[in-house]
Length: 588
Image (cartoon, rainbow, N blue to C red; front, side, top):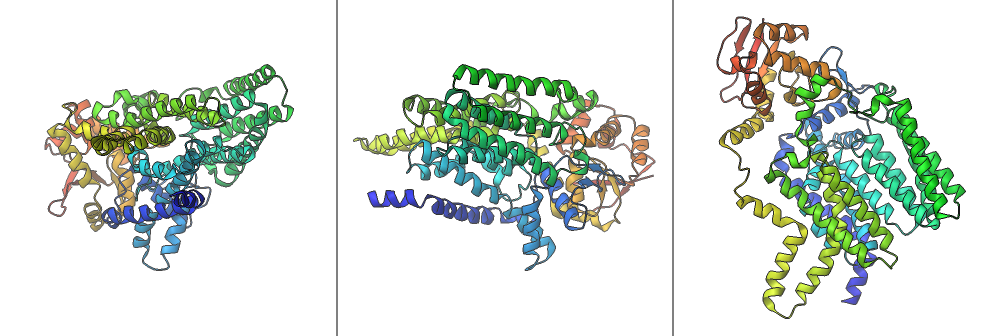
């Protein structure tokens, strides 16, 4: 047994990658149907594929304008090309063995699994350092229980969330790394890469920097970690901006790594590097200097970029009211139905309790500082869910070290218990409880927030509206601009040769408002808006979630009247194959 434990500990990296490889094969087989039908379920996934296609078709590296939304001018996407690279590389590789459509499908299946390997390795490294060298297999067993996290790595989930979670995992591993220089480099590099991809995890990057600074304030020996972090944070962000910032992101915008955030990050890195080099002996002086550096950054940012102190999207009040404020993932977790929120928050709360308990147990040992960092990070992630529910995947990922620490204590106790019922049922119950899996089992039987019949109809309709076989049938008509729902726009352009007017992206705000105005206002106004955008066809999908908004909030508006069967002289119904979920009209 001792030899086996030593082998497991010695071969942890190789064995972790084997687990990742086997898991990836399972996920690819399990979701082969989605791969076959290019079932990109999220609007961002469809837009990511369009961005990669444009790159492979010769669009400029720094030109991220999407010309098939709101043509002919199109609109800028605030993303970068970092996440495009592995997807484009896989397509080009698979292109050598099959056709381009098949290569795209399998690239979309494989690409999300690549950052999962990074997450697994980072999680295992963290658990080995903080829990026990032999505890890492338990962490991998617990990982699938983080359902919100794992969804970001599933085949066809090709947008940037998986890669940013990978950066977050590396950040935690770096915070816990006993080698100070390497730990600082990992945290700074991961934070810079995450910011280059997008600003979604900016608060976590700031929290990581604060934790490293506090470690230096408390322990002067942490100056090496702080120096490495400062150099890679500022230098990595500068390199990321130079290599990946689009032409549209080289102005003072607040929603991406533009000169606004680049200047803040570079200045922060420079100040922290100077503090680490000065490295005063007094803890009080170190604290004063750290607070002063933070104040300089905050005050300077407020004075130079006051426009970025509110919403980074910088949208109009009307757009925020009719669209952005209603995006589900941007709402606080307590604004979601209990049936949705309970399984998401359970694991982070268990992980926070586990991290706090582990920090208390290790309070006089070498692991205390690492556990304190994990506990702070997990508590911060839990608080972030009170701001936006989209923090759930990150919170679940950060909870896993604390959850593993609890499981490492409770499960062996149950397995060694002299009573057989405790060894069997106690172990199963303890695993379900510590892993948070009980939440998903219990919620099925609780009489709360059960979906209504109308909700089930909407969900079925949404699936049919996005189905590739149904959308491809629209290609029997010559390519043209179709006026359709905002949430259907990215899927339409990814699966057909047609163009659309809008997609759910804040830089496309004017077009989003035009779609809302057209469907909510009078038929005459709707026709004028459609013609102004050069649309020659109107495509609607009854009972798609967005359509219910237009009917519920604009009774008597154009879409409400259309849905009730009213005919308009300027709209000519066009035939579609039997069973199509769509209604198609020619705009006159």
